[in-house]
Image (cartoon, each protein chain N blue to C red):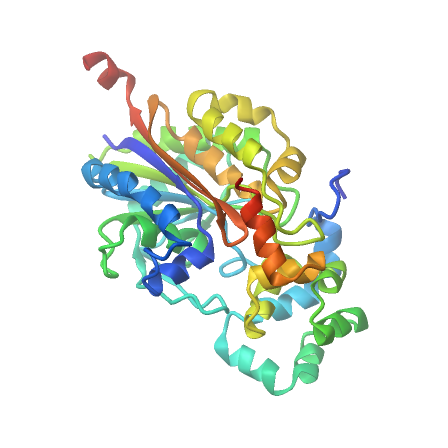
Length: 288
Length: 113
């Protein structure tokens, strides 16, 4: 059976992609951020994932306001990286796992999540930057298959934290009912606090971010009591990307422990963060 | 519009999305280099092609982010316009808050202390 071995949450700020392209990892501005990835990379190496399920949000590459799905699941053999208009390099396409995608889609719809399925999908920095960060030696030959799951964090009404948690639970159940022996890592991307627009631009809320980082590990359901407006107020207008993290955490159905975390202000206009979680099935935990 | 009391903050909802549709559609087109070039060759003609209203055209002409937002622009699409102008998110943050870019960067760094 497929098994979710853990999860990685990471910021997906475009400037990170630019810094990687320009080899700036050891610049004084970037070093505290990139140094936070060492333990995450070591964990990922030993986790040996076959598939990465990427929970992210599109920022106007694949989806426009003409058709804005609340939840969309990729169902393609590959996903294109494309020009986003402001200079981030275009990467090699990311391989998909269409069979697992359709299995997830079947289960989500049966579980009353009326998602949009996408056989043709370009993925933007919300997907590509985390791949670039977590597979730095790939050289464009991505060592995993990927499944994009896009959450609307652009046009309100956004899905509530509770709904996102429930979606995550359903994704977890779907993956763990897949008959093929696959090791799966779920990524949740974006955040943490930031606001790009309005006269409150530049808003960052360290206290709230640290609350989120603690709570998502040990008491994630407490986060489902927040409203979307609470998230806008406390995390900033674009800090609502934390919804992606909530979906990710929801997908971990076993006993969850924190392997690593890093938090650094600022990266561009954002509080940069990384969190690595291990997920052990109840049976595994009893054996150990 | 959802009720909220958050100062200086836009909840980008259906009302905004309707108001800004043409402006955002134009900015969405800037994903393609050929469209960026076409805009640069004749900004006014490009705005006409996408059906921008007078408020939106003026805000584009003035490169004024707060006015673009007031005209229904969504920041993720506007970012593609900012890209054409070689402005990053610190530049547009400074413009919206009336600060110098250095002061805006210092404000960001101070949030970590």
